[in-house]
Length: 306
Image (tube, rainbow, N blue to C red; front, side, top):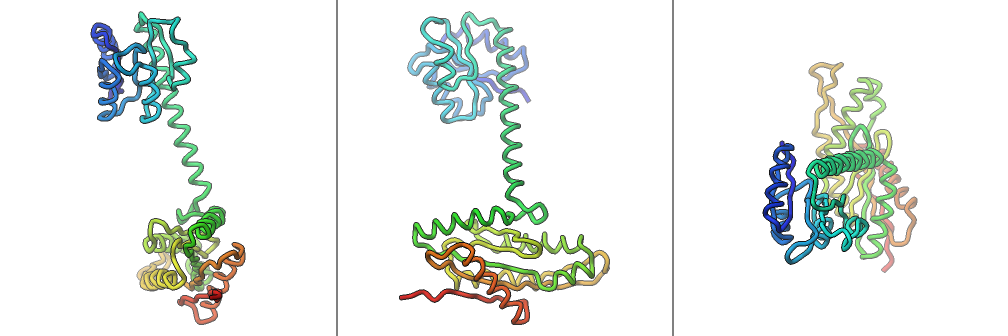
């Protein structure tokens, strides 16, 4: 696919000659006679690079460059025939990627265009790599839920938000019942499949604002912003019911269907308590579910003074 380039110049002879040179070089050139016409084209098309003269009717090329860098993911090469009136530094300050003088030698312009496109691709690749690394740093590799390190960071943020806007925030702690026995019986690879499927079930039960985490081993936790304790119990029960109806068929036990259950603890944040106390209360509630025979949801709340 040919790379789209936008040429902006009020001289039709220059526009046409540049268009011809760009087409010969294998690009897909568009033409505009003014900044306003260029902005209209930018609203309708995606351009990798805009090549613009500085002197234009209406908005000049530097003003156009400023608007392009503010609104679009597009690089700009600025041209001028008045070297004494405009400086390289001025164009770069506005966000231009390069600066060339008229009369333009097409060989030079094409070399500069190739350099800008190469740097553009390198920047895009680097940003994508950084985004991937950032995602890996906060994601559990197996379940693709967030990891425990990110959990603590997000819980602090949600508690701060809860204090600021006086909204409730609740916490779920979920643990797979007899998971060690499942691993010992069918192997860790089959156990991993259980963890992955449980992660999917948990996510399917949540709103966009909620977030789920693999807390460690077979434990999961869920932060429920703007959710009181009773509402959180409903979420935990929904997850528990779906999990107990799910069937697992280990490859080592052909045709055998295994049922998995979870024990859940629910609590709501109490104003001004520390994060560790909040988490510990959810943990206590979860262990209460274990003591009550597993496959159940238990809650533990602080009695709020009137």
